[in-house]
Length: 325
Image (tube, rainbow, N blue to C red; front, top):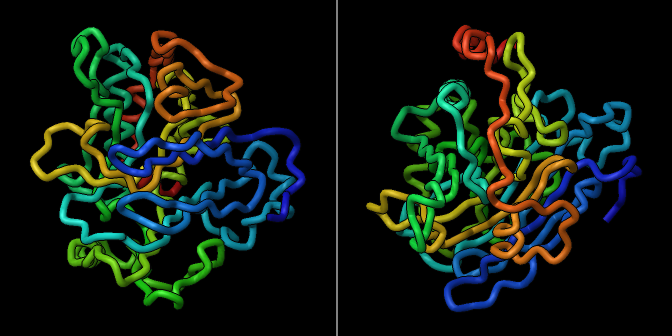
């Protein structure tokens, strides 16, 4: 691994392990994202590797020394998450790509409306219809008692990926290389891409490479900010209390109305946030994080978004304006 001389930590990241039902998960692997790291994935459903890279937006002068500089080039994406490997058995349940929080955050009515507008912008940018995006603010702790609570979740099927490459074993591309021109891309046309991913035969025998960067154009994880919204800079911490989020792929049995953790068969789980983010006490326990410098009680994560004038700005930001920003 070739280290890039970054000035101090700029992201907090962990690879969270899910070996399968009845198996004890090893502690989460802390990731140094200033390095070009490829991490293994090994569980009951999938064997392979994962890769995450983020532009050094905190200090653009470091871009030339950044390990993934050549991969991103002049592209507008701020980060990219890749998953590559083979399924160990046929996938018969719906497969989701999701962004998940560990802790419920109470939201005021105005913040909920602003969040819904942001989700709508994301939906238009990705070309998804209403049925292809699952959104849940999560269950309130007091509402479920001792029952399992759903975590805050934003999920979509494989149509939410940006690129899929299907290879014979041994002929798959290097996951950390430039993948331009390989496989099938969502930008080639959403209707054709929707048909392509719906017909994928997810079973052993092929190597699948899934790439995801769609929201990255307006989600700067390093600076913990929503960007590219005309006229406004929005802090993610003000909406989610400053906690990191999971980039996750998992299956859920067909017909389930909620994305409960106990129902998931996880392919990959990458926990990432700005260096200033805090982990909840329950997240540290659930993810088996051995070293966590900033830990907060679950009820410390609160909505602190300044909504004055924000709704009007967002409501005027149609998909065309966002794409051009």
